[in-house]
Image (tube, rainbow, N blue to C red; front, side, top):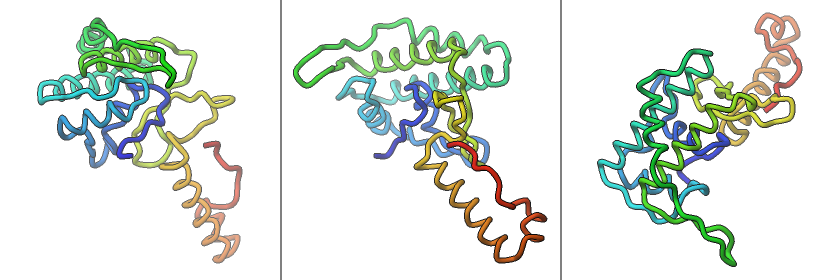
Length: 198
Protein backbone atom coordinates (compact mmCIF):
# COMPACT_ATOMS: atom_id res chain seq x y z
CA UNK A 1 0.00 0.00 0.00
CA UNK A 2 1.22 3.41 -0.89
CA UNK A 3 -1.04 5.36 1.46
CA UNK A 4 -1.51 5.17 5.23
CA UNK A 5 -4.94 5.26 6.83
CA UNK A 6 -4.14 5.76 10.50
CA UNK A 7 -5.84 9.06 11.30
CA UNK A 8 -9.23 7.63 12.25
CA UNK A 9 -11.13 9.72 9.70
CA UNK A 10 -11.03 9.88 5.87
CA UNK A 11 -10.70 13.67 5.86
CA UNK A 12 -7.64 13.53 8.11
CA UNK A 13 -6.23 10.68 6.04
CA UNK A 14 -6.62 12.90 2.96
CA UNK A 15 -4.71 15.66 4.77
CA UNK A 16 -2.05 13.02 5.53
CA UNK A 17 -1.30 12.58 1.83
CA UNK A 18 1.16 15.44 2.33
CA UNK A 19 3.96 14.40 4.64
CA UNK A 20 6.52 16.52 6.48
CA UNK A 21 4.60 19.74 5.81
CA UNK A 22 6.89 21.96 7.92
CA UNK A 23 10.23 20.87 6.49
CA UNK A 24 10.22 19.26 3.07
CA UNK A 25 6.62 18.52 2.06
CA UNK A 26 6.06 15.30 0.15
CA UNK A 27 2.78 15.26 -1.80
CA UNK A 28 1.59 11.75 -2.61
CA UNK A 29 -1.33 13.05 -4.72
CA UNK A 30 0.86 14.13 -7.61
CA UNK A 31 -1.40 12.94 -10.44
CA UNK A 32 -5.05 11.98 -11.07
CA UNK A 33 -4.05 8.30 -10.97
CA UNK A 34 -2.69 8.77 -7.44
CA UNK A 35 -6.02 10.25 -6.36
CA UNK A 36 -7.85 7.29 -7.90
CA UNK A 37 -5.59 4.92 -5.95
CA UNK A 38 -6.13 6.81 -2.68
CA UNK A 39 -9.91 6.59 -3.08
CA UNK A 40 -9.62 2.89 -3.93
CA UNK A 41 -7.55 2.19 -0.81
CA UNK A 42 -9.84 4.18 1.50
CA UNK A 43 -12.36 1.64 2.77
CA UNK A 44 -15.05 4.26 3.35
CA UNK A 45 -15.17 5.43 -0.28
CA UNK A 46 -16.49 3.87 -3.51
CA UNK A 47 -14.39 1.58 -5.67
CA UNK A 48 -13.39 2.19 -9.27
CA UNK A 49 -13.60 5.98 -9.51
CA UNK A 50 -11.80 7.82 -12.28
CA UNK A 51 -10.21 11.25 -11.96
CA UNK A 52 -8.93 13.94 -14.29
CA UNK A 53 -6.85 17.06 -13.67
CA UNK A 54 -9.89 19.11 -12.59
CA UNK A 55 -10.89 16.41 -10.09
CA UNK A 56 -7.38 16.40 -8.68
CA UNK A 57 -7.45 20.18 -8.30
CA UNK A 58 -10.77 19.91 -6.42
CA UNK A 59 -9.40 17.22 -4.13
CA UNK A 60 -6.27 19.24 -3.36
CA UNK A 61 -8.31 22.36 -2.66
CA UNK A 62 -10.51 20.36 -0.27
CA UNK A 63 -7.49 18.74 1.38
CA UNK A 64 -5.81 22.06 2.09
CA UNK A 65 -9.03 23.61 3.40
CA UNK A 66 -9.50 20.68 5.79
CA UNK A 67 -5.89 21.01 6.93
CA UNK A 68 -6.27 24.72 7.67
CA UNK A 69 -9.53 24.16 9.59
CA UNK A 70 -7.94 21.33 11.60
CA UNK A 71 -5.04 23.62 12.53
CA UNK A 72 -7.56 26.29 13.55
CA UNK A 73 -9.26 23.77 15.82
CA UNK A 74 -5.94 22.63 17.32
CA UNK A 75 -4.98 26.25 18.04
CA UNK A 76 -8.41 27.16 19.42
CA UNK A 77 -8.92 29.80 16.71
CA UNK A 78 -12.14 30.59 14.87
CA UNK A 79 -12.37 28.68 11.60
CA UNK A 80 -11.06 30.52 8.53
CA UNK A 81 -14.14 31.63 6.52
CA UNK A 82 -12.69 30.86 3.07
CA UNK A 83 -11.80 27.30 4.08
CA UNK A 84 -15.20 26.85 5.71
CA UNK A 85 -16.80 27.77 2.38
CA UNK A 86 -14.68 25.18 0.53
CA UNK A 87 -15.55 22.35 2.93
CA UNK A 88 -19.23 23.24 3.32
CA UNK A 89 -19.69 23.60 -0.45
CA UNK A 90 -18.01 20.25 -1.06
CA UNK A 91 -20.18 18.59 1.59
CA UNK A 92 -23.41 19.74 -0.06
CA UNK A 93 -23.36 17.31 -2.98
CA UNK A 94 -24.62 13.75 -3.41
CA UNK A 95 -22.93 11.00 -1.40
CA UNK A 96 -21.98 7.53 -2.66
CA UNK A 97 -24.77 4.97 -2.83
CA UNK A 98 -24.59 1.96 -0.51
CA UNK A 99 -25.86 -1.56 -1.06
CA UNK A 100 -25.96 -4.63 1.15
CA UNK A 101 -25.02 -7.95 -0.39
CA UNK A 102 -23.61 -11.32 0.59
CA UNK A 103 -20.14 -9.80 0.45
CA UNK A 104 -21.13 -7.05 2.90
CA UNK A 105 -21.44 -3.33 2.25
CA UNK A 106 -20.71 -1.99 -1.22
CA UNK A 107 -20.30 1.69 -2.02
CA UNK A 108 -20.69 3.07 -5.51
CA UNK A 109 -20.34 6.53 -6.99
CA UNK A 110 -18.05 8.84 -8.89
CA UNK A 111 -15.11 10.88 -7.66
CA UNK A 112 -17.32 13.87 -6.88
CA UNK A 113 -19.46 11.80 -4.52
CA UNK A 114 -16.28 10.44 -2.90
CA UNK A 115 -15.10 14.00 -2.19
CA UNK A 116 -18.55 14.85 -0.82
CA UNK A 117 -18.15 11.93 1.61
CA UNK A 118 -14.68 13.16 2.62
CA UNK A 119 -15.98 16.71 3.14
CA UNK A 120 -18.84 15.42 5.29
CA UNK A 121 -16.41 13.41 7.38
CA UNK A 122 -14.40 16.62 7.85
CA UNK A 123 -17.51 18.48 9.01
CA UNK A 124 -18.29 15.70 11.47
CA UNK A 125 -14.80 15.45 12.95
CA UNK A 126 -14.16 19.18 13.19
CA UNK A 127 -17.53 19.81 14.83
CA UNK A 128 -17.03 17.07 17.46
CA UNK A 129 -14.74 18.25 20.24
CA UNK A 130 -15.35 15.17 22.35
CA UNK A 131 -12.59 13.21 20.58
CA UNK A 132 -9.14 14.83 20.85
CA UNK A 133 -7.57 15.91 17.57
CA UNK A 134 -3.79 15.66 17.75
CA UNK A 135 -0.65 16.01 15.68
CA UNK A 136 1.89 13.18 15.69
CA UNK A 137 4.54 13.48 18.40
CA UNK A 138 7.41 12.25 16.22
CA UNK A 139 9.70 15.08 15.17
CA UNK A 140 9.04 16.02 11.55
CA UNK A 141 5.78 14.08 11.21
CA UNK A 142 2.85 16.43 10.71
CA UNK A 143 0.04 13.85 10.42
CA UNK A 144 -3.15 14.71 12.29
CA UNK A 145 -5.21 11.99 13.95
CA UNK A 146 -8.10 11.36 16.30
CA UNK A 147 -7.02 9.99 19.66
CA UNK A 148 -9.63 7.44 20.64
CA UNK A 149 -7.24 5.57 22.94
CA UNK A 150 -8.10 4.95 26.56
CA UNK A 151 -7.41 8.14 28.46
CA UNK A 152 -6.46 9.87 25.18
CA UNK A 153 -2.82 8.86 25.75
CA UNK A 154 -1.87 8.09 22.16
CA UNK A 155 1.26 10.00 21.16
CA UNK A 156 1.90 9.02 17.54
CA UNK A 157 -0.16 8.84 14.38
CA UNK A 158 0.60 5.13 14.18
CA UNK A 159 2.92 2.60 15.73
CA UNK A 160 4.21 1.18 12.43
CA UNK A 161 5.43 4.44 10.92
CA UNK A 162 6.22 6.64 13.89
CA UNK A 163 5.78 4.95 17.27
CA UNK A 164 8.26 2.17 16.57
CA UNK A 165 10.82 4.67 15.25
CA UNK A 166 10.54 6.86 18.35
CA UNK A 167 10.78 3.88 20.68
CA UNK A 168 13.76 2.45 18.77
CA UNK A 169 15.56 5.81 18.86
CA UNK A 170 14.89 6.15 22.61
CA UNK A 171 16.17 2.61 23.18
CA UNK A 172 19.35 3.31 21.21
CA UNK A 173 19.89 6.54 23.17
CA UNK A 174 19.47 4.72 26.49
CA UNK A 175 21.89 1.98 25.42
CA UNK A 176 24.45 4.56 24.32
CA UNK A 177 24.04 6.47 27.58
CA UNK A 178 24.40 3.27 29.61
CA UNK A 179 27.68 2.50 27.85
CA UNK A 180 28.94 5.99 28.67
CA UNK A 181 27.89 5.77 32.34
CA UNK A 182 25.17 7.30 34.51
CA UNK A 183 26.69 10.79 34.47
CA UNK A 184 26.53 10.95 30.65
CA UNK A 185 22.94 9.69 30.75
CA UNK A 186 21.87 12.47 33.10
CA UNK A 187 23.77 15.10 31.05
CA UNK A 188 22.14 13.96 27.79
CA UNK A 189 18.67 13.76 29.29
CA UNK A 190 18.31 10.13 28.25
CA UNK A 191 18.21 8.58 31.69
CA UNK A 192 15.58 5.83 31.79
CA UNK A 193 12.12 7.15 32.47
CA UNK A 194 8.49 6.28 31.82
CA UNK A 195 7.58 5.34 28.26
CA UNK A 196 5.16 7.58 26.44
CA UNK A 197 2.00 5.87 25.30
CA UNK A 198 1.73 5.16 21.61
